[in-house]
Every structure is written in structure tokens, then in C-alpha cells.
Length: 115
Image (cartoon, rainbow, N blue to C red; front, top):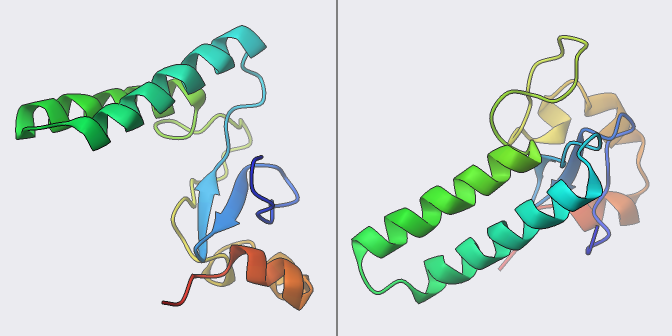
């Protein structure tokens, strides 16, 4: 991971800006993962370059498709029946005890940014 965000012990999420974000499916073959990341980065650039609503919608749709390919959206990639807790605050989730046990510096890396 490019940034040093806290990761849940089960490897399903990382915490950024005070929210749980689903990680990429670790079972993806490397070539497939790299292709999806490349498509995601291109689509994100295209969102920023869009000059109209149609272009922006198309680019955002491609961002969503790449995130689905990566397993970061859509059906969960784990098989134990645990629900998706994406975008929940870790202290208000099944990870609350883990979050509380982290040291202050680690929690700060995943905390919401203050202006």
C-alpha cells in the first residue's frame, strides 16, 4: 500500500479518513490486478480531465468498473459470510476493539483529516 494506513487484522480493510475501505481481493492474479489498477488510474485521470457531464459520467463509470474488477466494490471477496463494512468508522464496526487497541500514532494514520 502506498500510504501507511492501518489495516484490519483479517486484511479486508484499511482505514483512511476515519473510514474502513475494502482492500483489493488478494486472490486476483497479478496480471489481472495490474491491468485493473492501470484502468483505474486512467479512468481517475479522465475524471479530472473531463470537460462535460457525459465525459465525467463515462469516466466515473470506468472507475466503478475497475473497482469492481479489483474486488473493492460489489460482492465481497471473502467467503465466511461476514458483511461488508466499507465506509463505516472502525470504532462503530465489528473492528471497534481492534481500533481501540491500536497505539495513538497508528490510529492517527487512519484518522479523519482536520482542515
